[in-house]
Image 1 (cartoon, one colour):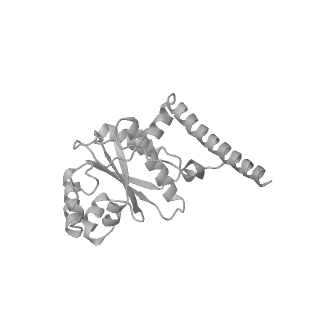
Image 2 (image 1 turned 180 degrees about the vertical axis):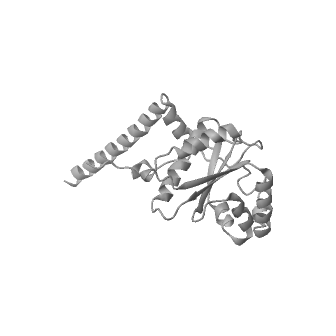
Image 3 (image 1 turned 30 degrees about the vertical axis):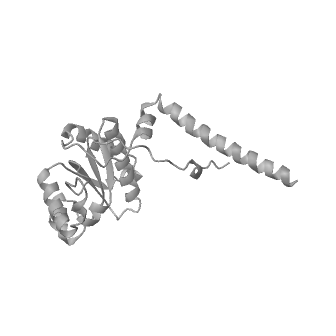
Length: 210
């Protein structure tokens, strides 16, 4: 009986493993013929960028893709600010360096946004309890549309924490968010100067419930 039970568990595990491999294989197969799936599966977070800023007409398209994301009751409880002005980015970075001198010691450090030439700041309306979710959907639309045009990106949390500090108050004011809105996160955009390998994903965390 123990042998039989062991065989059953082994077969069950093997079966589950096979199904997971089949799911991955199917995803790869679909990505080869579906451009949307291919964009999603090939996208990587980029932390090294070429110096040229993303053209504004392309950023306009990216932002429009963002604001066309699904959102609760069409509240559109977000505000977006696009910054590609080197004076803004470099000026803020100088303050950041004074407050965080060790950060500037990283090899190749140029600015606090992974050296990205274009940064998008996204604020949410905390009066709406699903606002953060809507802003996340907006950001994902922007990230994927950018990648489809050969433009890399990376979501940023650390710089936003600094932006909320008294030292960065002047630059926060320049963003001009409406009263009541709070800076939630930022996204770095630029042409990739690296192509990192994909990191593994745990397919086992996804289960179908019958």
